[in-house]
Image 1 (spheres, one colour):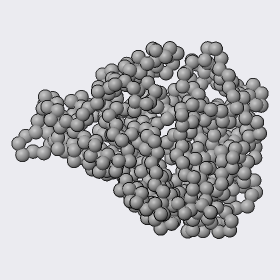
Image 2 (cartoon, one colour):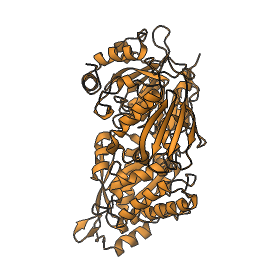
Image 3 (tube, rainbow, N blue to C red):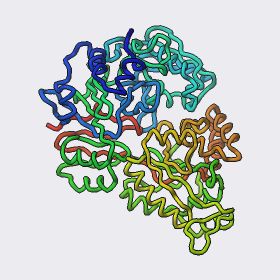
Image 4 (cartoon, rainbow, N blue to C red):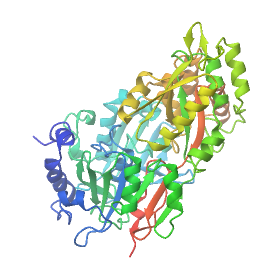
Length: 554
């Protein structure tokens, strides 16, 4: 039986990857020589240039990349999926969608059929051909698990994929879906796994073979809790990366990542909060050794507030919270001005989001007035307001080893406490936080919009299903059913003017119901050793890192 991630691969991922290393090397390199450093030495000698002549770039990473199933979500990390797998089209920084694995496409007059002409001579990293049949098998595999993807309207709208000829594939939709091409550029779930790794039943949700894609990088070894190692895909159709290998060294604590960078154990940290803001500010004072940079705003950092769970089911409580958080102080003292203040769910430059909504200003007196009027009284000598004998106490949930969110949480606890709102901080592992998002066991929870190309349509579309915190945050709203109906309508509306009015209603309603507390417009940061790494750039989205452009400093 061919080993799969449901059998050998899954067990290896859980308990060690000796078998997976040999198996993946054979699958991905077709007998090419193994890395110059062995698996053991790779863990003990992570440096920009490994033994021999193999150049290696070493990242500090909070988590492993996961088994890298292109059609699934956590624990698969999007950064790793984007390294290995590619899409038919690519989203650019200017918001355009350009050809990628597809050279061109035609759209039927009714907007329901897209015919893609595939780029010729593209191969998977095992040397097998990328063709229309491979596209169809991947689309079929995703549709076989359609319920898991129902948060994403793209998958709901795809009826089928058809092979026209080896170089041409047709995707047929149920309705005219205006963001179709944008969604086809997403990192997941519609990227392409080698057909040899798709199980016989066609459902990759139940397991898959080796993680083999057409991207610039191929998997060498995934060692849980230690590192993930990738090597250059020798069959890549595009410009080959300069580095031979990329290693992600797993360092869960932000302080350990800072120390590893300072000591030279790693070459670069990159992402949302890989080091604390104060550490980033310190790296900026060391230009002789490091380059510390900030990306353009890419998403919105928000708190989702649960409208169904007491006491945040009270609109007055949610509105009061908006008025007592001193965002300017957070930006200055916690984020070191790395991010800019956010007053609405989406920035004004996001499509359909420039609505002139009135922000909730910082006004503790107004917060006190709202709470008093709603019956939340602060008795003399008490620190916590009560109503009908019940305290105004809430849980604030965040990932415990994410230094930025932890620091913000402590400020939020103090700000809300001044208004008589008791905040219990709940810091835990990412998987535990994700479970809370799905089942609604939170009052306030750190959340973020998805950023381009998801915002606003895919992020808002996901609100209809309990896949993220947004559904639970809105579940107690009296107009929740109407919100969901409007979202469905706006995604299928072909008239731009009607779409704009629908977007106005949706975003205005969410703003007025105060189920989101926007904090800042999220940026990515990178810090790299300037004696070892050059040409570090930010990508067009949160999740795709242009590692293939980075190069060793001679």
